[in-house]
Structures are given as C-alpha cells and as structure tokens.
Amino acid sequence: MLDLELLRAFVAVADCGGFHRAAEQLHLTQSTISQQIKRLELETRRPLFRRTTRSVALTDEGEMLLGDARRLLQLEEAARQRLVAPRLSGSVRLGVVEEVAGGSLPSALGRFAALHRGVKLEVQIGVSAELIEQLNAGRLDLVFAKRPLGTSKGRLVWREPLVWTAADTFDLVPGAPLPLALYRERSVSRDAALSALRDGELGWEIVYTSPSLTGVRAAAVAGLAVTPLPLSAVTPGLRILGMGDGLPPLPDLEFAIYEKRRPDKAAEALADALLTLARGPLRPTI
Image (cartoon, rainbow, N blue to C red; front, side, top):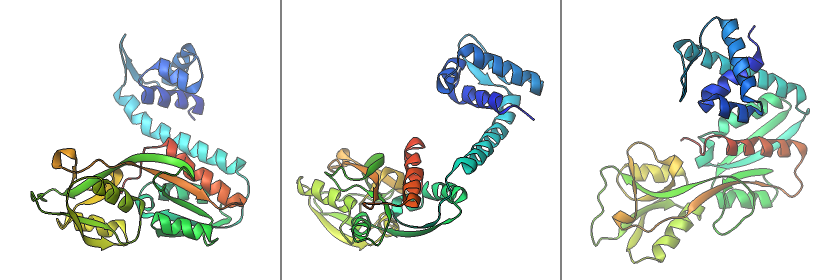
C-alpha cells in the first residue's frame, strides 16, 4: 500500500504548484518534500511531475494518481475523525436560510452525521429574521442565516456580494419605475435593496413578492422584475445589473451562525462543523 505521508506530499505539490509552497503548507522543509516525492516515484515506478527551473507540472501518470490519492487521504481523515470524535447524542434543531440549504450545507451535515451517529438533526428553512426570532424564543438550537445589516452578532462564516439581477432578455425602460421582485416578509436582502433605492433618485415599485428565494428568482428569470440576490444564487438565464444600468450599489451579505445562550455539546459540535465552510469555497452553489 502506498505511504499516506508520501501521498499527502504529492497532493500538496500538485495543489500548490511547487515544492516550496507545499513545504510551507505541510510545515516541512523543501528537501523533505523532494525526498518524499522521489520515494513515491520509486514506489509507483512512474515519473509523477515534470520539473523545470520555473515550474512543476503533473505527468499523465501523476494526473491519474491524483484523484486516487485524494480519495485515500479523505478516507484516512474520516477514519481518524471517527476515532477521536466525542460520542454525542440528543437532537439539534437547525434553522437555515434557503441560500445555504441548497449549497454546501448538505455535505457539511453529511460529515457531521457520519461522525455523530447518535445525534438527530431537525432542519427548518426560512428567512433570516424569522429564524433568529425562533432561536430567541427557544424553538431552534442553531441558526445559519444572513446577518442583519449593521449588526455584528453571530459567528461570521463568509461574506459575499449582493447584486441586482434580471433576465438576460430583460430591458430597463427609461423613465419607467423599476419593477422589483422581493421577499414577502422583511429580510436582509429586501431591507438592503429598499434602503439603497430610497437613498437614490430612481423610481421603483414592488410588482412581485414571494416567501422564498426560489420564488423571487423565478420572477427574475421570467423577465417580470429585477431582484437582489447573493452572487452565489445567480443562475443561468440571469445577468447582473449595476451602476452602468442606473442602479445603486448594494452592500455585501454576511452569513453567520447564531447559537442559543447555553448550547449543549451536540449543538456546539454542529456549529463547529458548519464553521468549517469558511475554510472551503466562498459560498454555496445553488
């Protein structure tokens, strides 16, 4: 079986594009990384990298090994975590906004469930203000939502732009009120959009409302209105509008985790698992 430490060095060099950066990432010396790659090439009897004075690139054999190496390291990490993870039980009531629920959340919940099989999860999807109210009322244990503008409560997971969107075929009519599709209830995106419009001189009117992200986005895709969306929620069929189209700038959105005052061990563990999303790609893909 291939040595996992050698595979870890191999993946680091491939990801970092060089031995020096891989050494920094793994907190090893560059000569140690070079020796590990040489040992791996001896074990596989294949050249894994093409080296020049300026660059390091995978050979065809290296490309073939890379996927298998990643899977082996993931299995090793999963097994290690299962052995060291504390045994938890009980249930956690999680509230989450739709922008997150359809993206990277399922993979995070899957990893948590694999580590803590004795914990039951109840997930509720809603808008930020409603979910935070339910948390404060004791009906939820944990909330993953957009942070209300101007506040610093909760633990920040990521930040991303809020953008104006419309159908690819949508045309703004000069002099006519801007047609808007917004959440029916008060929400962070709705408040940000209306605040930006009130500070400007552009005329506008709300022509469509929905309680969900899916609903307001459908109105935009259908060409009925313009709607503000997180950048990650912009799907094919939509284009981004900006100051060149006469629309005011929008603030960034912040996605944060909110916990009840005295969370139990299971809720704390789930919050920590969700915070790992900050170290992955910036946002969910919906």
